Length: 342
Image 1 (cartoon, rainbow, N blue to C red):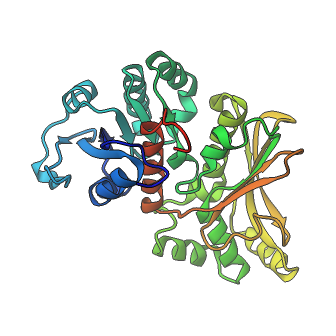
Image 2: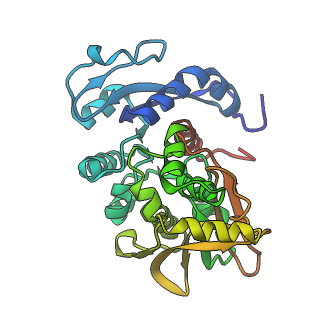
């Protein structure tokens, strides 16, 4: 038994998964293929109890495999999914789009009020329903975790929520969007914007529509959420100012590279400028954690004047990375209340 394990048999925990795109499929595969390992190492046996989308619903097979879509049934109410499965966690792998924002919010609030923990990779409802989600969690004595919405495998939310607590963090500087970093480095190597974006898409780094990544909107959203965890800012009230990566950016990227520096799309927030998030194209110098990023890596630097800057970097930008972040969060909410070093 490892140091992280609890004595006795594993605790059986059922999960309902909402959303079954690339991230949802990767998460379901993790539960199926790593279940025994997780039970042995963390004392929690995670089981997928149901998978739901806006148009269909299914029950996994006994071995945890999800049946093909043609075998799914019609959608059922969330309460029915939770009650029938006895779920303790609702995992949301829904797209961050206006079309599903209300669905994501309603499902999360309903689950939290029933005492079911929520792990989400969707961003939209976090921006618009932050206070309502918090109230629902308090009413149900449940937990909500958002790592997948703030940087995929990068544990930025864990640091913002608890890791820098009490350290007097007064600012955040971040490159939380892997596509923007990748594209800027390709521009610095002499490629055109179209070539850089095309290569990012070919490698699965960029979405088919990269506008949110290149405009700075995605980076600003992630920092809005981190600021909410750090300082209690209401995300919907945060003002955003962005500088995009566009055709005019190539010359600045090349000039920075000629000086041994790297152009970065840096999203920042500070207690000195309450409820404002800015995304700027900054020329970073060697020694800056944001300068050291390679390819689609991400980084967040928490400015703690007395403790010193605290940085976290890396984290894969991919469905697999987001699924791993949600798995980490699922383990976090289901092992809360352990003792000792666990």
